[in-house]
Amino acid sequence: MPSFQGPALRQALNGISGILVTPFDAQDRVVAAPLKPVVDRAVQAGVQVLVANGNTSEFYGLQAAEAERAVAIAADCVAGRVPLLAGVGRSVGEACALARVSRDAGADALMVHQPPDPFVSPRGVLAYVQRIAEAGAGLPLVLYLRNENIGLDAIEALCRIPEVVGIKWASPTPLVLAAAMRRTADRQLAWVGGLAEVWAPPFYAVGARGFTSGLINVLPERSVAIYNALEAADQPLAMRLIEEMLPFEELRAQENNGTNVTVVKSALQLMGHDCGATRAPSAWPLTDRQQQQLRALLNGWNLLR
Image (spheres, rainbow, N blue to C red):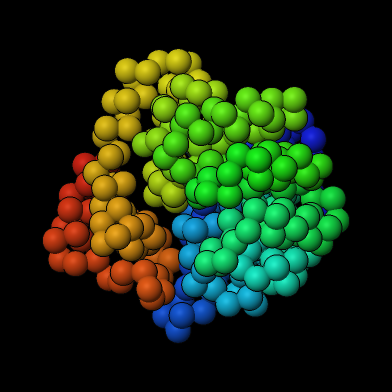
């Protein structure tokens, strides 16, 4: 049974949604042990929600059985201390199967990845999410929207699916976000900035709260400090804290964003928490120059042993 429901889950979604890495061993198998210290530190720092099978989890690099194992491992590590969101996606059949497995593993809600299919219709996306809602048997849904190409009418229809409690908005379009929020204000949904710490201030400005974060795998205390500054409306402090972590995000954005997870896993290796390599088509390993930049940054944050 889920540990967090109703108002408790809704309140947590206003916080930081930390996207967990998926650890691999030297034989490229999903393993459990390296994730526990990452989860423990995030929970102790005050991260409000943790997410398995998100993009920082390399969801699209996992086979179906691996995604099922990943959510079970995350549930064991989280152990009901904070809400666990389980990402589901790809084909509708795979998404529904993973929804059922995630529910049985103890996930508190499902995060529905936006379908990457090249032939996506607005009504098709609506049917897709409705099928997942049925498979989840009442579990709340959080929609992960990386673009708004299906249009505001379709977004509003998605938001009116009864199981939907929140939206992670991962498009750099705060004015469109504001319009979507106005159209669905009666539903009192959680609108979460889906572009991490750097984009949190403009999303906060239009009324979204909280943000997604991959940094929480490495330095959750900084993510929480940024969140606290934004909640206190201390914009100068929030911007200073974001400026100090910006080189980390700039490294992650290199090579067409292909070093996004590479930087996180490389940082964990340098910190003594090896979670393995990333899988192609992600970039691995970092170049010598990138590795030097990352090492210097982590040393400045006093994270190297």
